[in-house]
Length: 430
Image 1 (cartoon, helix red, strand yellow):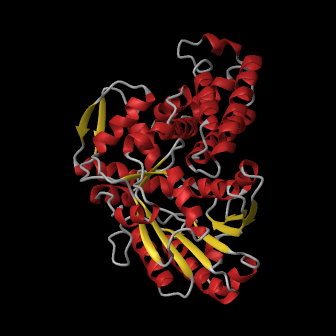
Image 2 (tube, helix red, strand yellow):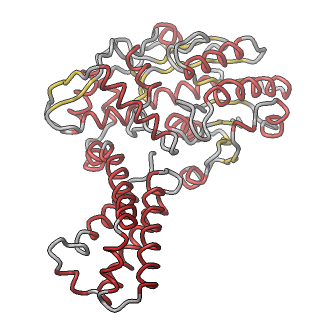
Image 3 (tube, helix red, strand yellow):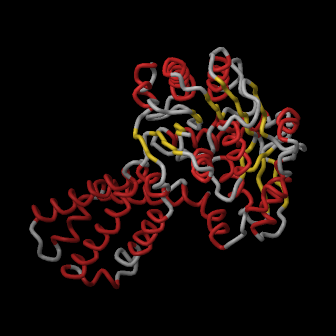
């Protein structure tokens, strides 16, 4: 078949695209950022479109011409710059349902979420629920799949946060979660393929969850074991501290970042993740994998352990570098006279010294601000390394004595440049 997969480069979507290709289907992925997807999955066809521009059936019709089935894997956790939950998960999808009905696309597989409903507490779950209801009211051969906590060999979003918690030494800070039912990423992809091929009864809703729920401490403990880390003592965190941490994640999202620590995640975690595994088990003849088997795909390699350790260090590294360069520029402006005196005492004219101090301070501030924004962060990292190299070269030529200064104004810039290279290396979220 020819299958369209909106959101085909995401955590679940990329697994779905791989499974569809392995089953022999022609796959077209769609999203607003498909450059990496084209490199990772060259066998698929990729269309670059923002779902905010696809809120009418007419906008979708040219994109679904010749398509036999649609698998919707698109989704965003929370509103932010460029992200509108209701548009992405409801309005654009309702328009797509209408377009499929007009174009005669027979089959639609909707990847929703366990607990989605039109009157849910969070916009994320409400928008999913509203789309689910609209799909049920359509004449399409639809299947709605509602996965629990999706875990796989790769980690993104909530699963990445669990890996990070598992990588902390001595203690595992955990919120008070009632219970969670998980599901393996490969099983989600397999059920999606079966639904797209019509191998399970359509016009039904299936929860994709394991039979037995688990506490969060149990899940993190299993991940620690798979990664080869010794057991850690659970450390319950007060709700006020959790709220503060997750609101900081909200603030980061307005700078273009997509951290899993956002208030929508917290509300979902505190509510637990549940579902009924029996309807799907009755259709497929077996239950979903239990947690130990789900986590068996984790290799426990050095790469996985590095990820667990670095995940929570990444925002600290970015914030530290951003504030360091901002402070450097601001302090240079505040102590303008002292800074220019360093240069005039070595023979530079007042005009040249002032230009160097002002220019350097503004560059530092621009790099610090650029570091804090996701879109400009890679360029800022490269700029930090380049400016540091220029600073040290010029300093060596004109003020070589500062290499031996007790406060180390030259020596201290080298670790900052190396840290910028580290930030550049770990910039990707998936």
